[in-house]
Length: 323
Image (tube, rainbow, N blue to C red; front, side):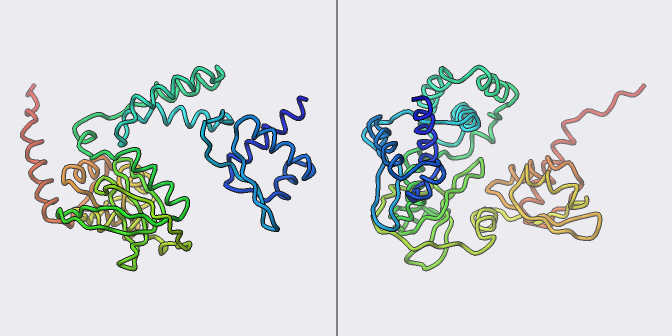
């Protein structure tokens, strides 16, 4: 009986981790016969897990959504990741999930083994969430909108939605979603714009009433490097070009942690940073956090802002007392 239970739990774990399994491959992974596999599938169905089967040469099994939510089977790393994610949700960029996240976290921590609970608590106590004015200034997005976009991306299903551009102009769009991208401050949808016949990147906080059309789209892949370029270039209000007076190897990790952009070496002792942002304040703060000497080549608005900021900082410090 213990062997059967363990085998069924392993089967459930495989079904939860993979969208669809061919029957022969699933039986081979479990080292059982196709007949035993069918019996184990029936056991899962009796427990409330909606396992769908398809017949034919390409037939297989997949776990589908049901009318009720049966228990989830999580390994240690998955449980820790979910708990940390729930604790972080209240300070994130998604609206309306703070209370729900707290309830879900309470249920999860109640059943976590003590060794995993200690890991989650250690991660939480050693992490500080920044709640300053810059953190509060970024727009949030609706959790339901994210869910619709994510499901359409997974299922390769066309979407209709309204979109407001930076200049305030609104339009109706039909797109084939590819991926959701989170920069920590904002959410973006990378998609193929059907009417324009090209790739586009949409800010999710400017997107309204997404509706799945039921029309499936052919698999598409954006050009190499498109996602990074689209996030850091055209959707940013200000594009900055900066020389960092330090070797690329020294600043590469700092740039990755503090800014979104690209680096290129300029000699042995300096490199060129291309980055962007929607506020001069954010760009100035980001450059300062790199902790290296730098020269801003543009835009002129950023140069002017940094000069004014430097003047205010200098005026705010008192001269040292003479001995």
